[in-house]
Image 1 (cartoon, rainbow, N blue to C red):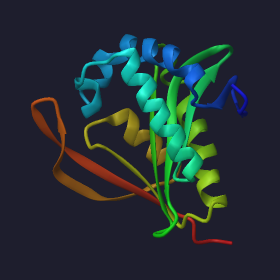
Image 2 (image 1 turned 180 degrees about the vertical axis):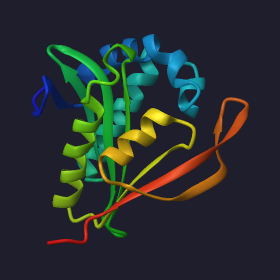
Image 3 (image 1 turned 60 degrees about the vertical axis):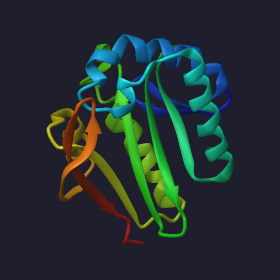
Image 4 (image 1 turned 45 degrees about the vertical axis):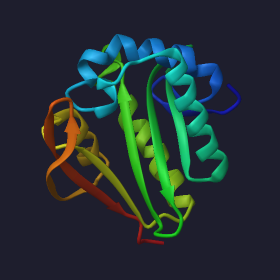
Length: 177
């Protein structure tokens, strides 16, 4: 990994690359049961080739300037993922994240999102969103800790497994100087 950004608390962010694909795949498999209630993609077959393909797509978007795909690192281990998707035309961005069960509640996600929020601000994004299943208390807590406001709830907006879940939309406005 060439890009490493210290975010404090013993955590750092690194660029998601093909070098991280296998370790991220294994991390995903270990956390699949706890990701499935919240993530549609967690219901799909998880293969190493799929992880490599996803990473390639993320890197292509990174080169195009539309996403910053990151891995969350503790010591020498990958412990999660965080990304910010950028829409330069609308000047909006969306944060996404997940963390390994063993590292939950230690501030790694909040620190990661704070760094990506700053990246979005520097990239000229005026609005940053977090969209999460409304019942996902840990994810909504991250949005609140970062000072995001709840804009509303989209009823039955996200298919997760055989259910449709309500999605809470939180926003942070970068309108100040």
